Structure formats: C-alpha cells, structure tokens
Length: 312
Image 1: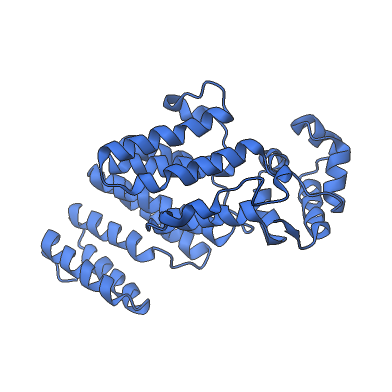
Image 2 (image 1 turned 60 degrees about the horizontal axis):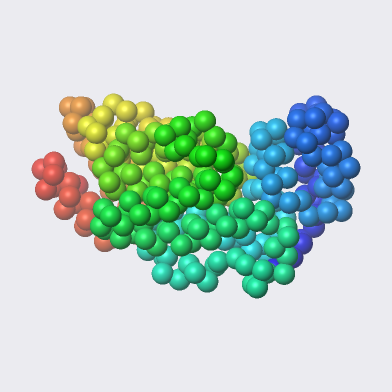
C-alpha cells in the first residue's frame, strides 16, 4: 500500500529544481512529453506522480527524483523494496531465500495503477532469478544471466546486450545490470564485468538527495571494479579506482567498505614495489579495530601472511 506523507512538500521541491534550471513548464513539456497541466499538478502536490513520469523528469533535471520522492513517503511498496534490493547487492549476502514474499501483484497492493506495469514484471523477474545467481555452478550463473536479460526486452525492443551502453535504463534495470556484472565476474569474464560496472558508475545518480543504500552501492561498484582489476593484474588501475573510492567516502563521511578499498590499495602497492604498502596495511587493520571486526582481522591477517608474507 502507498501512504502519502506530504506530496505538497515533494511538489515544491520539484518546482524549485525546475526553476533553478531556468526551465518553464512549457519547455519541460517539449522535452519530456509531460503536459504542463500534469507538471502543475505534481508541483502543487495534487497528484501522485507515476514512476515513469519521475524517470522522464529525472533525465531532464539531471537529478534522481525517484530518490527525492522516497524522502516524502511513509511507506512505499516498490521504492522500499528497491532499497531492499540495494541492500542485497551491497552485502552480497544470501538473503534471497525469502524474496518471493516481496513479489508485487494486484493481490498484494491496491494501488498497482501507480506502478509501471513493465517495471512490475521486471521487478518480479529479478526476484525470480536473483537467488539462482548465488549458486556456485557455472551453469546456474549462466541461467541467471539469460533470465535477467529477458526483462530488458520489455522496455527495449530487440534488446542487444552486446551494445548495452547504447540504451537508457530505469532504476531497476540499472540494478539488474549490476547483478549481471557480478555474475560475469564470477564467470571470470572480468573485462566485460568491468565494462558493465563502469557504465553503472556513470549512470547511478549520486548527489545530496541520494539514499544511503544508493551511496553504498556506488562504493560497492568501486570495490567490484578494483577486484576485477586485481584479477587482471592491473594494479595501477586499482590505485586510481581506490583513490576515487576514498575521496567519495570522505565527501559523504562514510567508512563503508573503506577497509576493503584500502586493502586493495595495499596489495597493489605491494605488487608495484611501493614501500608505502606496509603503512596502508596498518591503516586497514586500524579501521577494522575501530569497527570491532575481530573476525575479519583474523581473516585479513591469515590471507596477508599466506599470500604476501606480511604481518598484518
């Protein structure tokens, strides 16, 4: 069920963004096809904007209105479930056994008319194939990729994954691409995986309105890319990606996965014969100690000693 907090506040925010861009409602109508009257109603808080409307406006306003929309909701079935998907992608934990309970249908929400029916099908498709992606067998991962790709045909006629960069994607489609990128990494197709991750880096909107899961997902992408570069022995590229991640964490006052980013940097420094690697390893341990990650300290110490003969 959708329960409104205050659509008038959301509408006022949308109007301010438009006016800051020096766009009139007439210009927005020409750019998006959304009528001036519809836009007026949204800005006054008289209507609940449809998901596709927010997507179209987000493109022209260069800001994720769906994220802002989420700030003005007490309860929103599909957006809250999007956040759940982000949390799963962030943690890469096998939370997927019970995901079927989040399938959306006309039976479990009275307001499916507010949800893009294509988005609904794509969401349920992700729910179906996400658990399969956690199976270790290569065949299962290939099955999951094939199944996930079918959802893109619902929005994009004759979808061609080989040229996936040539398409524009919805919030949910970008998350589906993330799963596909991770699956290709599991299949050791690291270059293709990073091609997907780098595309996502450019297309996941990050700004002051972004939710915490979205910011965490952005950091997770940087870690994904760094890991793939490690598998490809491209250590200078790792340093560049990791430094971007550290700057991002500093910008948003986040320590999420900071230890993982620094560990990748330390390993790359080691392979590049940079003596600073010892200091960076110590920084990793200090962060783990601050976070009280005692078990992780043991794991990091064991791996570091076995692989690099360094006391962590």
